[in-house]
Image 1 (cartoon, rainbow, N blue to C red):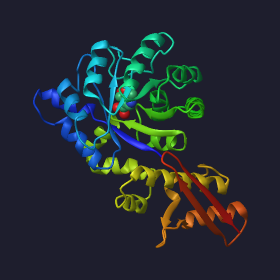
Image 2: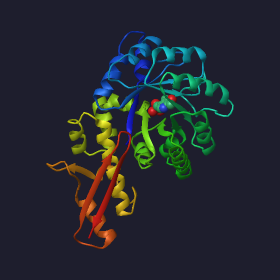
Image 3: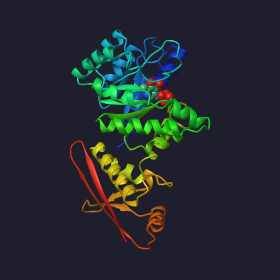
Length: 335
Ligand code: PXP
């Protein structure tokens, strides 16, 4: 299951440029959720250059809006975060002169301080994440720090992709870090500098469960509008039909997590994984009148199966089960 969190700090930057009230970040928070995002991210910086205390208080108090609050290790900010009680916290490094968060936390140097902060957030039942660089040592330290999640800094990968440089080593670091984190039962998120292309590359790492994206979504929305841009990100994972069906379902997390497991199972049965131009949205799952799920066969999938197994006719079978926190799926392709 992949979720989209939209960082709305840039709405506050725009508002602050005039020192007035428009555009309003609280309205933006409600709007992005209405448009299909799973959560909003805001960063209460020590210098308050975008989101301010009142925004944070009001956004955290919104009903039906899951809020991911980014905070530094500054004790005044930590106190405020504990008071405003967001659903999620992401601890990030902060440096006054930076234009944006430039890299992950230094976990080794800040180990003791982080341990105390994480303890406080977890005691308040706030899901806590650390913004880290993709390396295995930091994943192991995150485990020792007892966080729920890590958010992998994808800025380096995004820069390589945008400047048409070879990004395979960086991608490999992200893959390995994500796999280890998931093995250690740490939920994996990714963020920084992501656009359509980098997000699409990263959707193939199955361990990444959440993308937090800001600058590109808000920037692109100036030209194409927020509804279209958010939809374009969601479209990178789920088909139009699946999205339409999800609108009728109350428990969207369970709905998408079952679809996600079914897509994974199909890619495994085909034996290619998400390579050879196979994308998540190529594999569609529908339920018949009795509720039985099955795959939709389209031209692309048929061609891939025929080429891979050297067969003309085939059948697909799918079985999905779910528990409260897990979904599993089995797929069979029969000649
Ligand atoms: N995730 C974290 C932890 C961040 O600090 C930021 C903003 O720096 C983002 C995601 C979003 O990055 P961007 O605005 O480049 O999409």
